[in-house]
Length: 580
Image (tube, rainbow, N blue to C red; front, side, top):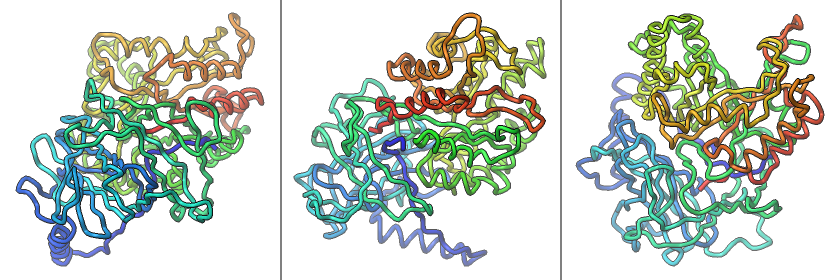
């Protein structure tokens, strides 16, 4: 297993019975007033429930976990399309019905202001600490109330979590099964910018401590075959049962950016070695078995209708997610053509987009999603050398992407984390400079798909070998440079697809595929590309049933040596993701 602490775990939600007509309206009204009276208490005038209310999620402590000693550090995320203004948190001792006010406990309902990174932005992280000396053994509830930069908030709160606090750790005779503890080290140094977020606390309202250990108990698994988790100390290879998080500003759990390490993912091959169709999800699992480690991310390619007609998520995709993997949706347009883009931007597919957004909301877990990855070749195939047509399609694509994100936001699909995914070949730099990037306000991650094309029959069969750094440095340098069309320098970067064939007689190098993977591991560990926080391998042999080649032979297991090298990459302690 690739042992690490995931920032999110699936939670069961209670779903009301369907009613219709007047009955549903009356029940909805009664529910709103009852919940407001019983759970929340008095509601300030600026707070209300509406379609555009901000959303709040508590990331830790986890539901039904046990915090053993130390402070309680609650962290979470908040989302709203006009910008998060702040987060108020209710911490309640359920055993004696008292509320934390920032310095002590009181019987009256009270919200406490949390420390927020990302004020004014669409997605923000928040944290609030209750010191150990103020805690007793009891069951506690944490609920967040986000409000916008305009001062409007959700009166009835977002996601809540309930957990138990024990001042002393469980004894050696305890039969409680726990998942790996997460040690979070925080700092009181003020952040230098709104990104990346940090768990820094306001010195006026929050006491200073050095670390908190959050230990979660194992809840009833949602899959038939639960997996066993352990964890790794990042500072050095170890068999200890905790993961130490570095201090300072790092990562952003609200958009799945790890503090340290690297999210590793893969596709599944759509065809077996004979070219016969197979389930890519089943192949994904088989590859994990060969590697002896689980990936963090499954790259899930989908046509437009898959998110509209109820076929997504596939039951196997859902099972992968329930076991803790992050899903990365790759979503094409209605006809997989640039002709769709202007129609999307003009609102002609809004009903479909809203349906897809509601589908994503029902999924109830954060996920990566990109719209129409690698649009460059599609633009060039239509426009050719016609610069005006190129610019028209560039604008259509950027506006379509932004429109989809805005509709998702309006519907409330805040668990969608948006990835701009391009080829990253500077032969298309004119398209990038012309505005192919939709904008920082609608993009969370930047991804590019680059390969060592040596030996690829359907891509020129280049006789020259390109080492890992040579493949990925060029577009990375463009991202880091000044000029038009560039994403903001704080955007995390993902290798949306990457890969190499075996060396089949390169004219300039005798490096093997296994050595190429070793080189990749070294660059990831050494921080050659510090903004790269995820790498999703394109694991396919690319053979059709008639034996012809559709893709290159990227397969991880093209040789025993390449598979062993990638296994070593996945087991590298320095690359295990950690979350602040």
